[in-house]
Length: 71
Image 1: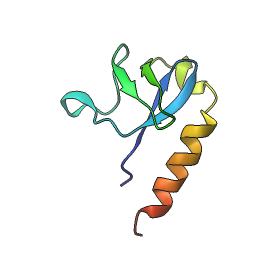
Image 2: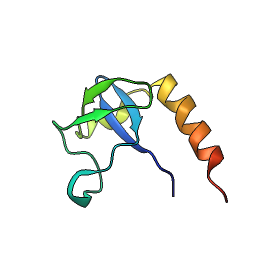
Image 3: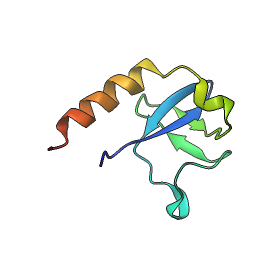
């Protein structure tokens, strides 16, 4: 589908091109992830973390990448 995945980390929902480890559905809490906004963050896969605001820079880059995917 899309080349990026969403990950709550560092107090916001970020997007990343890093592959999920061991074919997991999401990034497990505690794993380091490079985000589309250029940060190196630690994933927090808790229920409340998914309610954090979306990083605006990751959102802009994710939209650009999504628009580049043929439909």
